[in-house]
Image 1 (cartoon, rainbow, N blue to C red):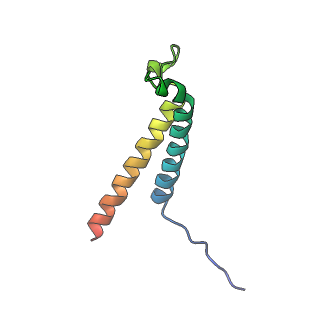
Image 2 (tube, rainbow, N blue to C red):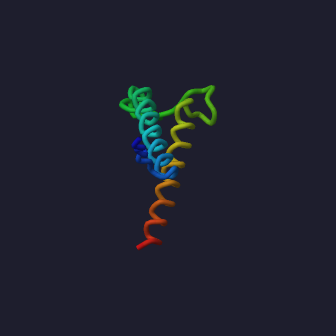
Length: 83
């Protein structure tokens, strides 16, 4: 019986990719929600009852962006160390 292994990428690559894609989706939703205020040259986020004046989508988008950037920096430093 033949056993075929699935090709897997390292966990850090997967986390970086998925967090980057998730951040892109969330920032797109923030932009779509704030588009009328943005075109009126107003503040992008300005909900009075939100945490520090930002909409509920900003915080997870910022967190996923930070994870994606940190993962990219670590992967780049690992690649630079190998070369």
